Image (cartoon, rainbow, N blue to C red; front, side):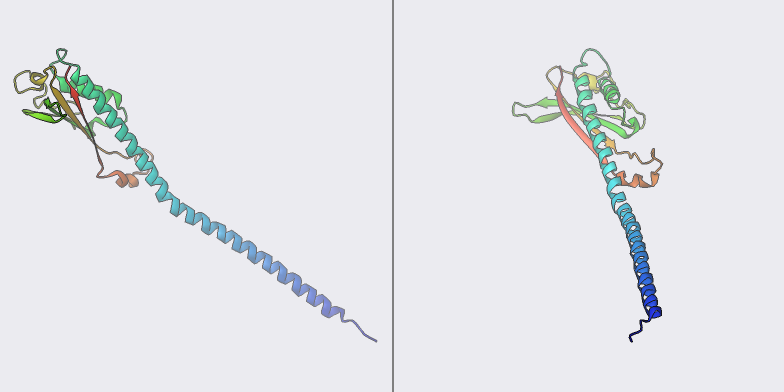
Length: 200
């Protein structure tokens, strides 16, 4: 007669059940570890990418504001003949008004008066280049506001031309966001815009 060893069967089933439970726990632990590792990798991979995108977008916005400010400032200067003794300040006031995101202390201007040939070549007039803007946040009165022959107003001749350069030292949004340690992303950045307008 064949006798079944029930004790051996039970032991075998218990071992198999424990083994399956152990495998399930191991797979669950490995899956959890994988999720944690993936999350950490994504954070350290995408954080530099996202901060760079934010910095680049901020700088691009500043460039667009600078370009608009220089264009409209030059237009205001070109149309101010006979209405002001300080054409450079007129240009800067217009520039500041249309560029609220730009810090006046970081914004400088250069005004060069001259003539334009029929082939489109601009020729500066000797001694007719003036600086404005900067730390004072307005025309620094280095000659642009003078009314004599050396001042910009003396060069406001209808049909002549003025070339306006605007330069801006880039700022960073991270200081206002409590992440000032990221300001270095925009350090050393200088934006420039230039336009030449005919004096009306």
